[in-house]
Length: 84
Image 1 (cartoon, helix red, strand yellow):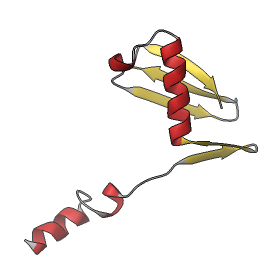
Image 2: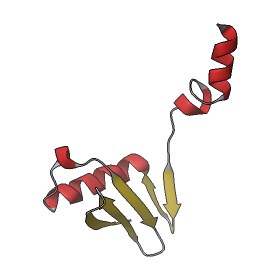
Image 3: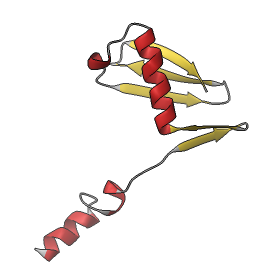
Image 4: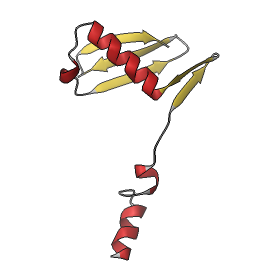
């Protein structure tokens, strides 16, 4: 049993990096945004633009701090952007 656990851990299935809590913060030009903050802002913007929370299955996010914006695409259909 110990061997199987060691193999799974080595393959990243359990423990270590695979399950570690991750915090992502983007810094640019004196500004700072956390991953959670950006996701909340995107959700709020999408809902204000008519997207139902329960309809969101996939979000592609493009962070372009040099332009001052974060672009997003929901369900490969709905485009939007928020200020960085």
